[in-house]
Image (cartoon, rainbow, N blue to C red; front, side, top):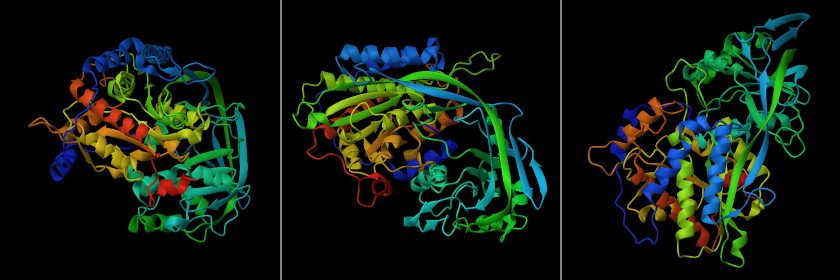
Amino acid sequence: MKFSRILAPVAFSVFVAACGAPETQSQTVSVSAKEANIRSHLEFLADDDLKGRQTGSEGHEIASNYIVSEFKRLGLEPAGDDGTYYQRIPFRKSTLKENSASMTYEVNGEAVEFEFPKEFITGPSHYSEQDQVSAPLVFVGYGMEAPEFGLNDYEGLNVEGKIVVMLTGRPEFLPSEEGAHLSNIKSDIAREKGAIGIITLHTPVREEVRKYETSVYYTKTPRMTWLGPNGLPKGQEQQISGSAYLDDEPAKRLFANAPTELDAIFTKIQEDPDFSPKGFELDGKVTLKRESRHEEISSPNVAAVLPGSDEKLKDEYVVYTAHSDHIGVIKDMSREDNINNGAMDNASGVSVMLETAHLFVESDKEFKRSIMFLSVTAEEKGLLGADYFANNPTVPLNSIVANVNLDMPVLLYDFADVVAFGASHSTLGETVSKAAKKYDTAQSPDPMPEQAIFTRSDHYTLVKKGIPAVFLMTGFNSRTEGEDGGEVWGTFFAEHYHKPSDGLNLDINYEAGARFTNINFAIGEEIANAAQRPQWLEDSFFGKQFND
């Protein structure tokens, strides 16, 4: 799971004090997770021998084989490709060739060269090793189209065969999760409108949150995508042939003869964060060039199924997901510890999923719907493994009734409540509340909506296919007197997230892990046996967007 910024631990303390843990009522349960099992899984997956489980690495292959062996031991049926537990995914890793990127602006017979990376940056192409695009420019504001929020930045503009110029970010009046989704699909909208290139403008507002120089740091980092059965990146023909991210000061050159100066637009969005500027054509044209290196690798999703008992409902699936990859080894060999073991991110989630599978198998109950357990790869590369599954499912997509995602439960304190991302969008919110109460655990509202976490983990790829989803994290209240769960949570993200210190040396609370597993099992049990499949709520933006 990706977090854009870390909230100070004190913020979590304030949230805990404000909310408190509502009283709950304990109920009898038939099976219970075993701490020893969770410990065993987690200690294997976060061991140094797996070298941080980087996508495509030997360590991740070992992790995948371990998960398969557990599925076999539990007697689960294979649900990958060709009667196996594996869904082997072909990936393309692309790297921008050094000194190959150029951006030229031509207007009134004069050519202006922008300097890489001081004034603009770009990434590699997944489609070609050498590409060039040259076209006129159209400014499209934020580049959004959302009639339900009164946004139509392409209104009255013809961008067919042109390069669109758009501001980074979004108007602040947009709700966090909805705004994050609309930001994610900007390039899709531009492509649908016929644009052949995109220039995104850094703004003074963005500079206050993330400096331009920070983005420059990542220009040498390879990028990945999955290849479809047709051999194309994400199975799609190329249309956007070039892109650039332009710093705010040099960007003003493109607006020298524009109806509205860029300085005026920047000033307006600073004064009124809800403001969305109207678009217009710009003088001149831009030529973008770059060269890329391609490398083909593969990495597997792993899938297994516990068949349902009902003659009709057994063809419907409750899908648990947990990503098994992490970020590998730090290249700085001078460090004493350079392995990013990813104990919490996400060995903990996979361990909970495996023990959840054990509970389903061990339970003497019958489950009407089938239960799929899906360990996905390449989450850290942009939710790629889950996205591949969503576009190439091993069971009919319309047979998946819900997704319960297990991503990075922070099992470091004796949590007394849970936060369910997605609870406000479907009937799964009520399901989570009911399941949590069985274990004297409350459900609390999202304490950091600005993070838009509902759009930032693997379940989002299935949400975009119309499937209701939810995933839990440990809340910020603690059962232990004197323990501030929010502070523990905040400290983890400030000091250990995506660092070698996220390892087995952490003070892992396996009792909390067992309780977290029990709750997730209860969620799946409820979905599996309900008469009706989960429904999007009538006023949910995501339900309206994706539910046919």
